[in-house]
Amino acid sequence: MAPRSSTSAPLLLSFLFHLLLLLLHSANPNPSPNTRRVYSRRPIRFAEELIGDLNLLPGIEEVEGGDAIEGFSSPRLVERRLRLPILGDIGSEISVEQLGHHAGYYRLEHTHGARMFYFFFESRGKSSDPVVIWLTGGPGCSSELALFYENGPFKIADNMSLIWNDYGWDKASNLIYVDQPTGTGFSYTTDLRDFRFGEKGIANDLYDFLQAFFTEHPDYLKNDFYITGESYAGHYIPAAAERVYRGNKEKERLHINLKGFAIGNGLTDPAIQYGAYADYALEMGVIGQDAHNTIDKIYPACKLGIQLCGSSGVISCAASYILCNSIFTSILLLAGNINYYDIRKKCEGSLCYDFSNMEKFLNEKYVRNALGVGDRKFISCNPLVYEAMITDWMKNLEVGIPTLIDDGIKLLVYAGEYDLICNWLGNFRWVNSMEWSGQKTFAESPMAPFTVDGKKAGLIKAYGPLSFLKVHDAGHMVPMDQPKAALAMLRRWMNGSLTEDQSIVMAADA
Ligand SMILES: *[C@@H]1O[C@H](CO)[C@@H](O)[C@H](O)[C@H]1NC(C)=O
Ligand SMILES: *[C@@H]1O[C@H](CO)[C@@H](O)[C@H](O)[C@H]1NC(C)=O
Image 1 (cartoon, protein in one colour):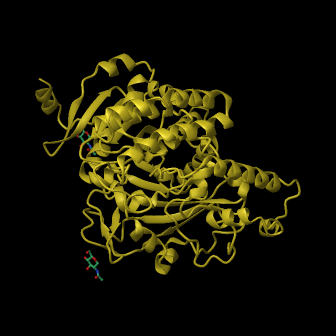
Image 2 (cartoon, helix red, strand yellow):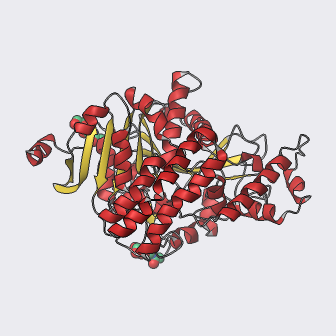
């Protein structure tokens, strides 16, 4: 999810100013070990709101059912076995009792007091299946959105029962969901300095988490490892892949068997993707030619801002964020009440969909006890994590990718065709224009049908380690709209080729 910005320029500046004050304040050279007292001596209302919204502080020591997750003497990673009842057919030879479902907190190493929450679901297939980590975007939206509505092992029924998902990605992988960056979902911190403003800090935290995870689960180190996710994770994923790749190259710590990364309807190369909004909207009949021409006039300034953001930093990053997003906002104004994640639909609910069952479920007492999250309130998307990332938004994450794919790490970029916010056209354009050793051959490769059960489910373009897939009949959340095709995509991509059967593709091409 990438919730649409509601930030106006003055609000943004005031936010940045306050944040600066808070940072200066929390960088106090004589920090008290009791951070709670430090903050309460300064009753800045803004800070209090921030703290409340970030799941900061209150009741940390009193966390109920969160045994052993607190305190400096506690281990870095505390994981518990989940025993939530799940209805329906597990669809596996493995019994529910044998199948490991876990939730845990990892005390992030290079922070002052941040804890990262995660789920780990052992594969319903084989334990030798790849390990896959999923990252939801936002920034600031919980990966539980994907767990419960897209590709998790189970879904939530209206009566709050869990039901097995026939197309959960845990059918083909050992699947991890993390709430990140700090402040997202059930992840929290006791210290404002742990706040992340960009990809470097986020990727480092994730790398620390992965190291702790594989230390806890050494049996999985030999498995293939893939990083996946959606939307703003188009930023997180390349950064995380690059971080793991570098850690491996430099033999920093445990070698993580990174084989590839997949970005679903992501934001990766803003300069190209913001240039595609008006074209996509015109092509899909969301706006007319005149509106297209008018909106397109904003683009050159937006593009310049993005270039400056890449070279000169914070101010141009914030300015280009505001300017470029006016392109998107203008389209929405003309389009009326459309769901910008799926232009066939209307926008209903704060995220344009109704995800209220998840918030209800995760705020149930017995669920919290099972997860070990205490009384921490769950919100799907944290606006403050989002705001803190505004100067990261226009950064180009494509730049680090060529090194990885030229070294044989696979990249899959996929996009549901009806998503506006991270539309397939913008993604297709950046993938095509990326400079790497196979660029020319990739560009010349034809689009081939992606078939699932003999039916056309999308269009593939692939060469070597790079694949692009346009998914039919889907919006922003591909595994929600096309669960069967999405699972087939994951399986085939990890296993070498997206095309089900070479002969069918040849016939269709001829
Ligand atoms: C809850 O809903 C599911 C799916 O609709 C159904 O199978 C189950 O029996 C229901 N449980 C209760 C307690 O009503
Ligand atoms: C992967 O591909 C090979 C060869 O095409 C096939 O035999 C195997 O069953 C596939 N594995 C999975 C998990 O789909």
